[in-house]
Amino acid sequence: MDKKLPFLEAIAILVGTIIGAGILGIPYVVAQAGFLTGVAVLAVLAAAVILINLFIGEIVLSTKNRYQLTGYANKYLGKAGKYLMFGATVFGFYGALLAYLIGEGEVLAALTGGNPLLYSLLFFVFGSLLIYLGLAIIKKFEFFMTLIILLIVLVISLWSFDVINFENLAEFNLAKLFIPYGVILFAIGGSSAVPQLRFVLQGREKLVKRAILIGVAIPFIVYLLFTLVVVGVTGLTTTEVATIGLGNLAGKSMIIFGNLFAFFTMGTSFLTLGLALKDTYRFDLNLSYKFSWLLACLPPLIIFILGLNSFVKVLGTVGAIGGGIEGLLILAIYLKLKSLKKTEREPEYKIPVPGFIIGILSLIFIGGIVYTLRQFS
Image (cartoon, rainbow, N blue to C red):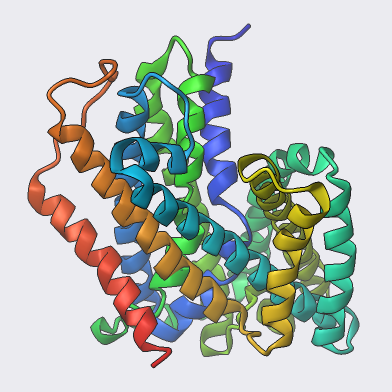
């Protein structure tokens, strides 16, 4: 077998986990904040996520047994850390499911006309049925969906480049730094995939560090290109689901092409997360199959019916609060690891990070949580 294949697979796992439906919300918040403001936030958060993922990599490589993030939190922070990490993970899953439920209704309405609420409910019926059936092909399809997303972003960029208005790309506003924060953190996060990299690269663990660097760099470039094109074309008329507004300005073909892209991107993410959440309840909490399915699917539907129906607001809240808590817990695990005189195994790499960097990362996550909570007050 080609020795490069495990390394490429490791990169693909991280890229596939990061790139998803979150890409559709980034242009809207970047347009609201100013393109240069958004690019600055995207760059800072990409750097922060690289560091966080490198920390997780060192934690994984320093520990003998195999865990997911909740397991590492339990091992190094105790039960309180375990429950906080589990809560942040579940909160993120529910928020993402709700966002995709909202987004699918808006995209289907843009494609065919009609009521977005009705389309969201119809999509829920179909999607929740597939989650109940537990089709294994959904998980396998996610990898190919990632490749399709990369290709479509390139096609959309080439298709729309001629109609970019570069005046839309000139604004920077320091006061609006936190506007795109939550959505971008939601879209660029992918920490849950890092523990898998060690086992994909078994015997070649030294490559974990490089896989993390490349695996975050690729989504950063894709997001930057997609956002540049969409904001360049639509400016302040950028819609919450980016392809809707882009199609309105770039012509009927883009309405169909762009929104079909959005439909399949959000649909695949909805099914993948729904299956993962159902399996979490079923296998981690030993609940029955039907009850696990109901717990996975009904809460997003109930919240949607109660009136929380802003795609971007949901993404931003989930990213800032769920992602922020997860980031803080990973920092706590990392500090606990560094305080040990001896780790269970010698990691293939160590990150010599000054204390002030940990402090800056903590302030970024805390600031995002506080800013988001204040929006609800």
